[in-house]
Image (cartoon, rainbow, N blue to C red):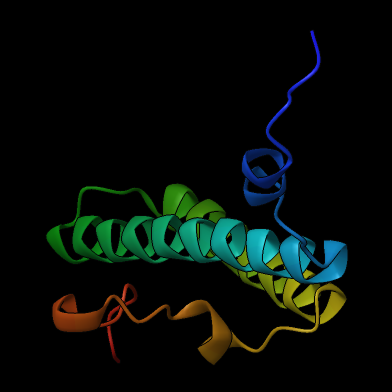
Length: 100
C-alpha cells in the first residue's frame, strides 16, 4: 500500500549525520558509565573509612577502580571526548556528574 501523501512522508524523514549520532550516543553511554563509576568509587571510600573492607579487598577495589578509570580515558580518546564532555548539562537541574 503506497502512501499518497508525499508531504506527510517527507516530514517523517529526518536527515542525520551518522558520525554525529554515533558520537552523541557514545557520549551518553560514557556519561552513564562515568556516573556509575563515581558512585561505586564513593561507596568504596565510605566502606574503607568505616573499616568494612579487609586490606585485600581495599587493594582489589583500588586496582579495579584504577583500571576502570584507565578504560574510561581510553574510550574518551577513542571517541574524541574530554572528561568535561561527559558532564551533560541538564538545564535547571545542573550537570549530571558532581563537581569535584
